[in-house]
Length: 114
Image 1: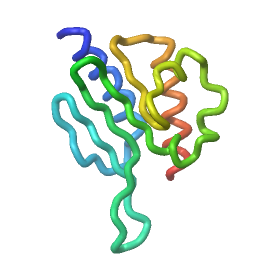
Image 2: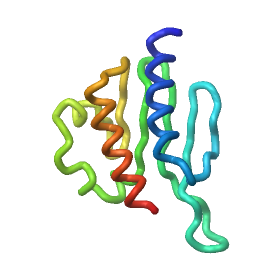
Image 3: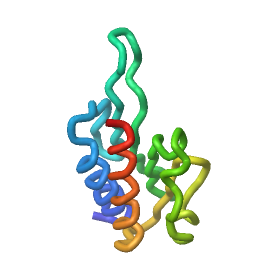
């Protein structure tokens, strides 16, 4: 398993752990996509998060931080440095410290949407 595959596996595992009870739209090698159940009978599902293997990195999307930017308060400069845009974190390798912090952030996001 190469470094990109290891990074994807670690990030996908983290997202799956916090997505319990949420609908998973896509779960295939290199792509995991988790939705938020619709709140009304005819409403479309919302987007919770995703992990995507790309050419140069693995992207971890966490939509609740876009909708509730206060969830990002107190994150470390190291994790903020990984941000691209308002809700995406890019990784090229597993960093245990940053994954632990991302785990806590994902838990806060999951609590915010339930």
